[in-house]
Image 1 (cartoon, helix red, strand yellow):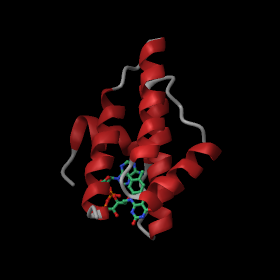
Image 2 (cartoon, rainbow, N blue to C red):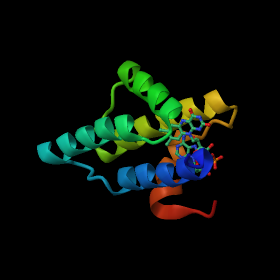
Image 3 (cartoon, rainbow, N blue to C red):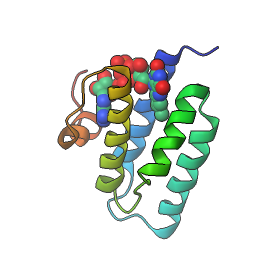
Image 4 (cartoon, helix red, strand yellow):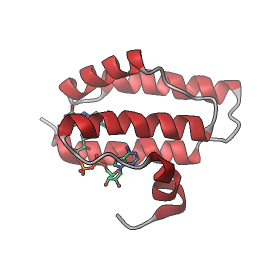
Length: 106
Ligand code: FAD
């Protein structure tokens, strides 16, 4: 079975990096692609407990794809929900772009 921690770290890196490079004013196609990607992601993520909880989360807090900031903040909140579940500290979402776009050392 996959290493859930290593898989999680790599996956969050991919997802937040997608957010950081998502357009500020996405086209209809870009918005639709991101929605499709996240929907398929939530079904294929190879940590099944994680995927199940994440799908439940997405049903309650619907994904926002209208702009880079909307998606970045939505993803930050979603990641914080997992942090809370796992007893990890909550991340300050006003810093998501600094962490994932302009960059700092982890
Ligand atoms: P990670 O949580 O992997 O975070 C990596 C880095 O992201 C951090 O070092 C920090 O710099 C930054 N960061 C932290 N929080 C935020 C935030 N809110 N917004 C932006 N940046 C942030 N593991 C389980 O054991 N059970 C689960 O149910 C589970 N569900 C998951 C669901 C999903 C969709 C994903 C992608 C992962 C899931 N994981 C789950 C894995 C878990 O979230 C962590 O990735 C793993 O425990 C490793 O944690 P970490 O402390 O290295 O930091």
